[in-house]
Length: 174
Image (cartoon, rainbow, N blue to C red; front, side):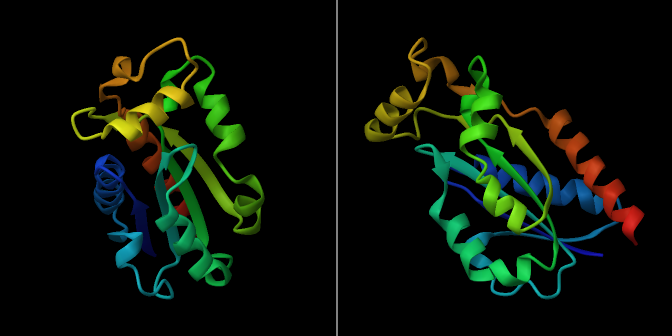
């Protein structure tokens, strides 16, 4: 099976997750191409498409939305998985908030997305301009200033477990 891992990233954290997913699935014996959604021109050669986007200002990145719009009809014929990277999952009830407000459930149903995942990201406040910091402050629960979330919160074991789950599902279909 040919697998495409396509991601949209702002500061590189989601890109690193995408590369990790691609590498992990390759180690499981799958033929994988990993790329930014901006670099993907066709998806017809792929049986499985795994999409990932960072969440910024409470929504998917425009690049991911454009990618899905461009390939929507063909994606509906593929096996699709989706993950989002969002620092908000670190808040109390953050996971539930992300699942309820950031997952575009109607679109996921139309695309017949097999599984979704939410991963905490990496926030390097040295790379974030002041406008983005204010947006972060407004989006959080108000109890904690975003500087408390400055760091790398990606759980590579959790991401690897999700990859294993996907690899097992794909292998069962072969």
